[in-house]
Image (cartoon, rainbow, N blue to C red; front, side, top):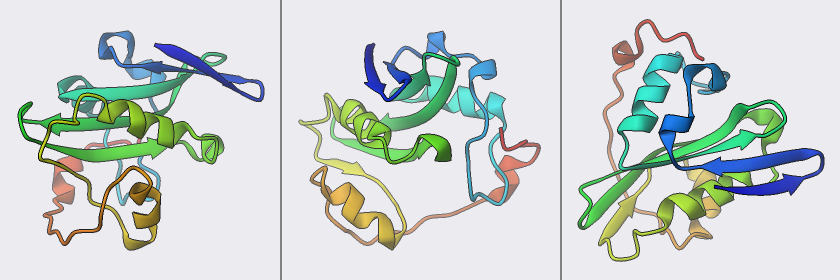
Length: 147
């Protein structure tokens, strides 16, 4: 864990998901047709190969998160990265990406899908555009409350 101050907010980065509980999550999945429930969100973070959350020390609230899934040998993927709108443009997302990529230097691939306008953001981490395909099954989010 390491703190970082931006203005009056002190942001602490947490990699041990046992320190995170449902009460700290909420407000994420902005722009999704239906967000994951906070229980689903926490289960995803805890079940990931690696996850990092940014916690506002003043409120105890998670204000950003990223997770990485991997075989632990050669491949990994970053399925989710989000920072709450009120905390965006403070470098929190970039710090989350930097931290989640630690230890992946020996992997053949670390994949991330994003919309075209976001490609320049990820290129600064050494990522290059590639073609991809995905299935999206909204029914898996049934019962999600959007956090």
